[in-house]
Image (cartoon, rainbow, N blue to C red):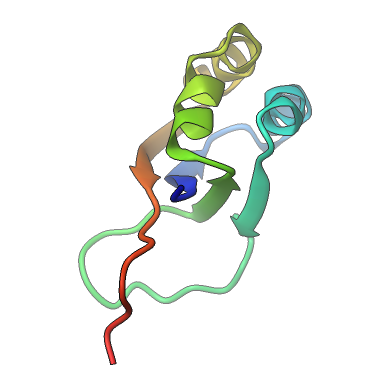
Length: 102
């Protein structure tokens, strides 16, 4: 079964308040088996299109787990902290398990 991923690009207006979001989001992330793949603070270079200040990729055991986490009451509490202080683009996407390009 393919894994699920959250891919996010985020601008944060209040870094101190954002720390509260991180603490609140840790609860559903643990519950749904999330694993941080790309850190919001890693180096990046925008080579095409637009970007935001922070980028994140979070891996889940399945696409369904990724959706369930987003829709959970635990994440809704975290999102209520984040939403007023950020501009974000977030997608939930199913991983690819097929043949690789060679």
